Length: 118
Length: 116
Image (cartoon, rainbow over all chains, first blue to last red):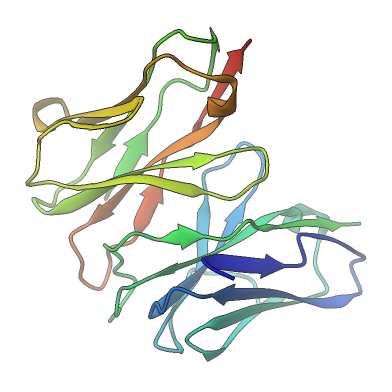
């Protein structure tokens, strides 16, 4: 398989559930990202990992917990979410080796996970 | 701070028409990168083009062309002879030239509908 893959594609969960989103990149990239895309809003950068280290957390609530066990895999663990967290969650990767946020290489995106919180 | 403005929110055209999607950006850096992405109904953002601030040559790729003008801080995207498969949301994005605080900033997107 090539590119960036995400599972599941669709997820419905209650506010008390715990679930995880998975992202895998097959591009040999060094950096991975989580974005949130809500209706009528620009894409919001949530987390950035470079060489498996979290580079920055963009003031994301603690009910979202990222994990990057290796340079090819990225997870987003979800617990006690709110209905306003319903959105499309997109994963991306790039060649960048990042000291901070800094990303100038092209980011390649996965198909996203459509999350609905009831 | 960097900013991307896509003033058009929705555009509807009939197949075979040409359509231009506008993008205006703001940055204080002299080195920066501009991108266009396509998001079809399936959700995935598909990379279309990356240009750096030192290369103002216009680019053509099949039915797609891009017009980069630093004087007006614009990076417009034209689809020639549009097709139904071009229906999607199109995002323009800007990344400043590296360093600790650079990140990819997206515009709000333009929804393009191409009718048969």
